[in-house]
Image (cartoon, rainbow, N blue to C red; front, side):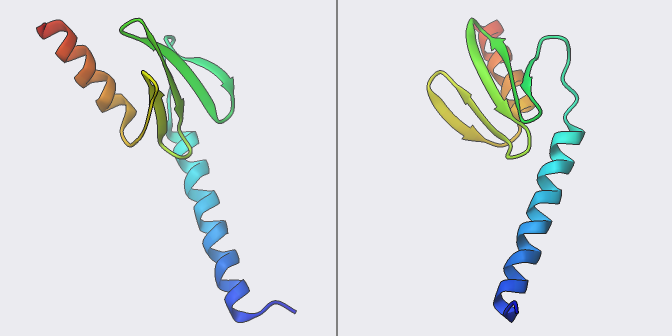
Amino acid sequence: MTSEMGEMFNAIRARRKKEKEARRDAFDPGPEWTRHCDTHYSRDLLGTRLDYWPGTTRFRWCGKSRHGDVMGFIKNREKEASAS
């Protein structure tokens, strides 16, 4: 028998799983992205590898992990590089 608290946590886990799946499905990689598996992509950004996990919105670049809008991050880095 599952407790009321257990049911609540199961509902939270199910909702988070659906949200991750929706983010993975919404990610539309272009030809510059390399797909390693369903959950992991990478590409070159200014001569350095950028790894991206769309389900969690986590990405790693230059030895630093970040969360958020990877496409906005890429645009900002390319804009900064072209301004230099």
